[in-house]
Length: 272
Image (cartoon, rainbow, N blue to C red):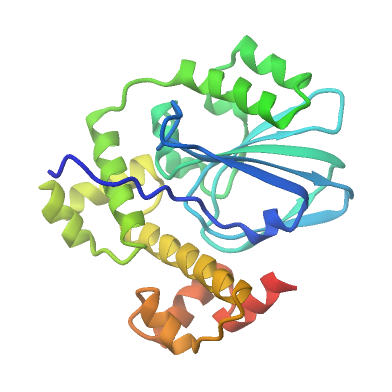
């Protein structure tokens, strides 16, 4: 198996988050102890208890800390396989830790696929610790990052061989923007397609093919958004090929599956 690869630095795009008030994030740099395990830390405010948050598939599991009551509410948010609208029933600040795909396996033995589409108390998934109690009084974004980093570093255990294989494959998929057949991963790692599928189900919670579809979606949305900011107009048929889809029909099918609408309609929705 190849031993080196340039990290892809996958930072999922969640337009629903970035449209929230006072949104900010901190991308984990290469010299950070959680690099490759955590994608970024983020924070935003909610001014209504009757709002909603649009979430699209990104292959990541989040640790969420919600402020607004006497105590901070700490949960683990499993990722979704389709676009969903999550009700926001609390006024206050939300601080999140977006784990990289497969990153949770380095902190707990729970099976990742059991979390898909679910919300659980954080201490049902990860070990409790006095460090977490400091989150109640932490008011600054940077302070919250420091506390959670300390907590996760202490929870961190050495990756199992299987988790290392998944991390290698994940980086390859991200590096190729999702356009990478599992047969190629099998060739590069020396493991069978069936074995890799089983590893992905255990550590990531979905199949390699489904993960590739999510990365293609994330890449296409991000690139389209950048083009719009630069006032560049490109035909969707050309974009489909550029993003690694076979054609526009293939792109349409994937968008319908993951976000419930065609690309053009979805792009319009996120720009409103």
